Image (cartoon, rainbow, N blue to C red):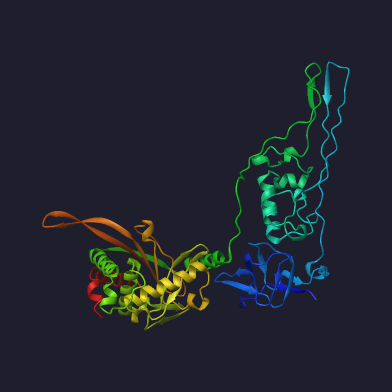
Length: 469
């Protein structure tokens, strides 16, 4: 008996998952344990394996579709089996109705009137006349763009209209304004709007009067050229983008956030990294029996190392605020913001103040790699007590980082800039690095936050001393 492969539920809060890639196609043989497809939640990527052997008889969704949990993704069975109950049957692609030719009325007067018949008022099938098999993403895109679904050629399983079919309609100019959709028009009508969009005035063609002497032979007018580039495109927010949006909106709407900006002399920081790089290149770390560095520590690693230690002197910033309770932590679970193709992720380095520079740098790289591939354990994305976000590599000199609730502070690391200071009456240049600290004024006042920032700058200017432990 054929078996339906459903979208698994990954956690009680997950309502849908996005299909990543299919490893098996229709007609492929499947054995128990074979990888069928990948799918992703807002936090991680998973792989669905076959629980039965057989042949892939149908695939009901496309890569990139947002599929509700427990919905059928594909069907596995034996060739020739009746799977209508599992796939909902098949539906023929609707055929567009050709408009009747326009009659030409002749007259003996010096001029003739060529009456162009008004097309039948038939509304775009937004609801009842939609193709019977259409994906939710395709239906939403058609509603937003005004695509004429009567001309859709379904390229999905069993002729199902999917998102790319609607995109093809938009690119071909088969789109209409809401007013034109209400009035109705013949399929294939070329509109006068941008990119061939059918407007309200295009739904009825007025009579055209021409001179009998100059009336051209009756010919079929060539359709107007339409632009291949759509006026705009609508992109559905991914699950992780929705989570980021909710979290950031909650953060800004519920907190009294204030940002303090400072900078420090990065001379010692630059010298330390240069020496570490030289030692790594020469293999001195192995010769001297020092902790093995998977990679030369970055400026971010050095800032994280100092931050984790200075925070213990300012524990009110290493805290969570919930209603009227401030939970102050005695250990630093350091959140590190990571930019990924799927959106911002913040994995947590547990007890960061207890780790050496090598241990801290190696762990941050492992967490960042897991975030980039989407294989990060969801448990590693929670529990942070303070967050550091670094945009210095992008040339940012100062910014306003947004706190990750329920934390009460976040440190932004900026890029290097050249500044001047007076030494014996001369202006001497030096490399400075900026820091931007945002704190929740409900939990901590500006002066204590400023003292933390000042001590951190001092620590980073003298980081060589901190490494002696």
